[in-house]
Length: 124
Image (tube, rainbow, N blue to C red; front, side):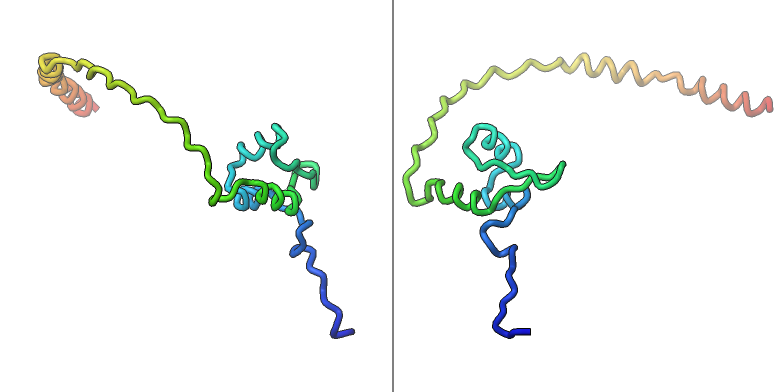
């Protein structure tokens, strides 16, 4: 074996394929945003790896990132939203309705039910 021979690490090259979680990490975009941008043609196309798996070329992702405006460049401010007018407060039920319901519940016929079960137990 020769000592001067260096192993080639294909994972360290820029032409490696990266899967969706790493693309999301590198770009800061979500899954839907990435696929919408691919559909619109503003993001690199995915490469089919297997029948069910796709990946992106890291060099294309790096080039897409390099095209993004840097933080030092001024960006147009977002449009100012108009203030919403507060709506009138909703009307609530009166207190008399709530007290009527609780007063009606106070005369619960649970005593009859308990008596009926004790009578059944006594019969058996």
